[in-house]
Length: 623
Image (cartoon, rainbow, N blue to C red; front, side):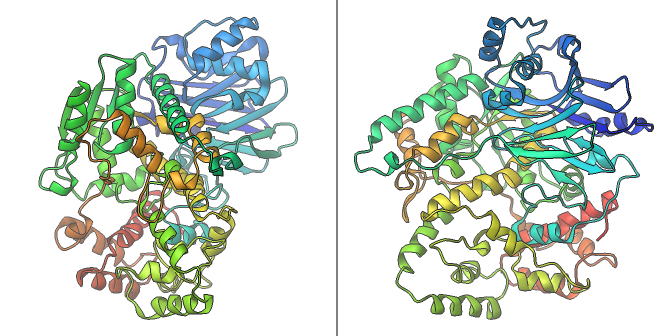
């Protein structure tokens, strides 16, 4: 796991000092080594920070080159099938100096061009320069586990693993994009190739970018998409036992591949279904598996250690229970700085705490991310199915009237308000933005009324992103995989773990499992209006101990409502959001505080406003 930064241009680059400065803002991504390289003509520069996982020797140094073919690469990630690719490439005549997957990636491009992306099984983002073609390529993995930002202006392409690396150059513009801000306030993140800053972009997951140094143009293309659900999967003759067998084999293979490395590898064991299944598969591969669970003293409902202890004891893992230290409000400015784009997910705090504690014991850890999106694990999936069934014969006009009444008369943060607002969505083809949304349009308008012509972009973006499917569960899971997973959960894990120089891998996001889940598993084996994650829990019944609570569902969370009653967190939130230069309307902010004090659930909404204000002030951005 590493950090990369670079530049490519139609002309020779004069100012080069910023490249090393940007690289070293990502020291946390790679404390073990650093490199910088410039092409002879001065038009391409690549720099790299290295976290050594495979081939710890200097042979793994980056940027890495194939001088005979005029290739150079700066790469972040892991190619889990690199040994298989190495054998295939060796048979084609390629010789290797190192055991690094980076060298395999260079050879794969030399053999197959950018078609090599379809052969890679891993999490990655890379920049590869082909001097013979005078082209630079960027690419990201299928799920979007590894980040990549870029900016094209005046025939020059600049790119980096983290936005802060580009902003290390004081000449870079820092104006907030109003449409991106509207998406942030509505969705909790900025989706797709959009970026919170104008003129910047994110390379979307499963996409590649080609920059032509001759003409200065870029071409962005998708190399992989979620497969459609096969008609056989909807057949009454579907063999569920065979489906379960295939799931077990795929998960075992994914875990086996992801346990590779020349450093200790652990498992983050929460005691939930996903991490427990990863543990079960890990012990099949190794007799010595290290597992870690986290306790939060004083917050019993958040303590996962008893559930994890059951799994660890059953499988005989080398188990460590780590106790989180009390959290202070000082962590919020640090996280706002680290996350590049602000993101509305207060569970970034416990995710950072977990990463900080686990890094003391190992350099790589396996997690359970992806199970909910692939196999229907979120509670709101069952609620959507319930609504779809109950509202099938209710007139659309009545549903729309209830939605409007809820929007107009119910206070923000009132339990059930989001669901009532969502009744205005036609569940035959759409998805309610409000169910998982942060601020509705009316509240966003009030927050931004200090600014002329505030954006109302988010609803249109949400509609454009919604997958086309007659099956509401297919629609919702695909929507979450493409957006919430990529722009929230995986960003949270990447930034929190990388801040601690810890690599977290996600076996459930092996592309073979992704394709299995979306092409072969019918919605009836994912969720119903009463049950969730059905097929995955059947696998849990098969391989986990009898006393395991497979109905338990607990994601990382913090006692935000308690923290906002009084004390340092309350003071930080209030002082930040009532300062004279705050983006948001003071009366609208004070209204949210009053509702929070009366018991309404607006903690995450206030967190959203604080995060962007702390981020904005640190990076000197403006609207």
